[in-house]
Image (cartoon, rainbow, N blue to C red):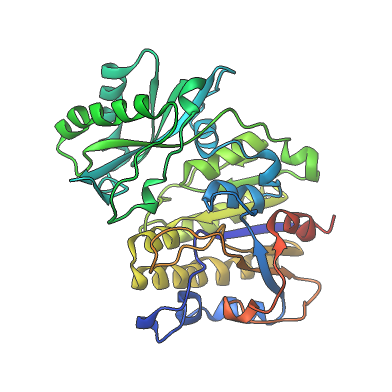
Length: 379
């Protein structure tokens, strides 16, 4: 038996006027998904436990079968693991975005989406200027890591993607003055590189995260592909093989076909389970770009789901779990903790069938998302 987990990041949404009151999942032309749903189990999953922030760190941890209320310590430590940073007991990691803030307004939480190659010298210059008590580490595109003493963690920090087009909400708490001072001072360095970004934004802090190995918990060899550090970091922390894929990006231009082919290749090479994570639908939600979100979902259907099912049929009996890690309504341009649709399919056993949309599962009771891995594996 082979297992596949598909995560269209932030795919769940709310009814949109320009789509005639439909959601992107309802409006997108997804015949392969619709056909699969008719012979699967569909329902609602609570990827975000009550009281926890509705982030991809929490949602993807749950999808991998770990209860976030038990294991989650913060977003940044997960991303730190992805780039090989081992936090000492007296250290915390912060997510360090390159952003653009103009006249106190968060005009771009992604700082113009610089490439990783453009961002790396900016991060190096920040470390040269301010390193010592703190350390800057380059990540992917606008997403980077700051490592600081544990005392710096005593602050409430707002994710920048929650502030698009709004007044910046600066850190609060005992450590806020240190964070504010560094964020303000960063403008001189970041602004000197001629990018759209003009400062750093610190958030998502936490101590080292300790996950039990996936193989020990579920008895399977697993692999995943994602262009997003936090998903890759979860893989590192859980002992899951993280596969690099040429052409895979965290934007609209990611190579869907290459990610699907990486999944099949890993399963052919002996992996029992493979997780495919694509960020594009979430990026579209944050940008408020309805057309791009619909397009991302249609690419999932044509380039991943349809061909993947054909290839799995020739490989082995299979089971598949599909769900987003959270909702990212395009009207709100940020995450919400609302339950999301899930789909469970089995090549040997048809389910009751249904419609894979928000309205199609609205009457279902939401199950904890971290329970679905066991359900997929029937354990």
